Image 1 (cartoon, rainbow, N blue to C red):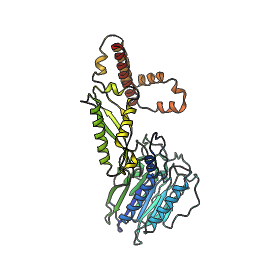
Image 2: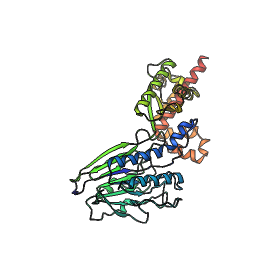
Image 3: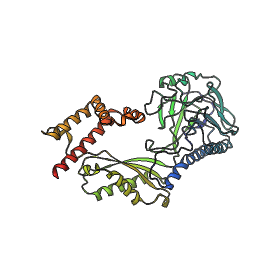
Image 4: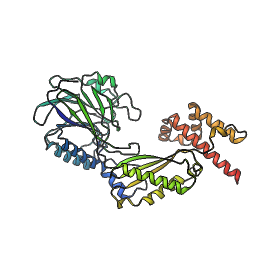
Length: 430
């Protein structure tokens, strides 16, 4: 606990990625594309509404407010209006910029309203944060990225300045080397915990995470998911600090469009109609989970059953996706639409590969060799490199393949074995 004489509330947000282009979507209707393109701005308005509703004393934004270093004019103008709305209520705003929106990026010459402070990149600054009645509530510290790729440990530059009852550090960084994010401004949790600050408001990682309490080290996550890798609710933390120094945190979901993944089992199914019914039921559950918001859903088929071999046939998964889209109706016909993003097949056949591997003959030998690669990382890597030799000539594809884990490679090999087995048995039967 800490000695705090002024109770106050602040909102911690990060990774707004305003005007994100949502690349890579194919065969998407205009209604889906338009809603996605506007979603980051809708989430921004949700942030404004939270600040107003909670009567927050100040707002901290932990980097990547914009999606690109050369910020779109549209995004800059919308953010300016949002800052005007927030500061008109007497709420201060403190901003750092990260790898997506560094100082070196092209910016329009716009004036931020009084009450907004952007931290520069020359060094860590300390600024006073006041409650709405004018009392000093905290010192807020921050530093922005000068360029997109910052590999220095910026956390080591933070030094607490006495004179305030609470100290809040604002940083865009990768704590303890999260492999799913670029290792920018790398630092260690122990370094943050021992630096003397009461709250580290972090950005960069798009999942909300409370890494530690007292002192608090927190990722608020982004405010709007941008792909199927960013599923579920997205939003901000409302943080209230009491007179005694206790910290109460409440997450508020402000995402305008949800990305979801739902799992459907094929076990016990032997007819396509039964599978269709199960798929539609799962998507209806996703619609309910979205609570009136539109959502893009990836269906993951799992389990073992007689449908497995049929699902492995060329283009079958894509045909199921098209049928689901037609069955659910056009997105423009309803506000809370569900758009099936894709179907991923991770099923297995009723005959286990391990049992077939004990058989004599070509199929048994094929499965035995394949399973050996599944169980050995060196063999799985070598087998896939041999199978994908032509693709390895493309630098970006080679980089992506080399980054796959053994578990991913093993899954691919198992699927290839089951498909090969299915094709060989079809040929024998013919």
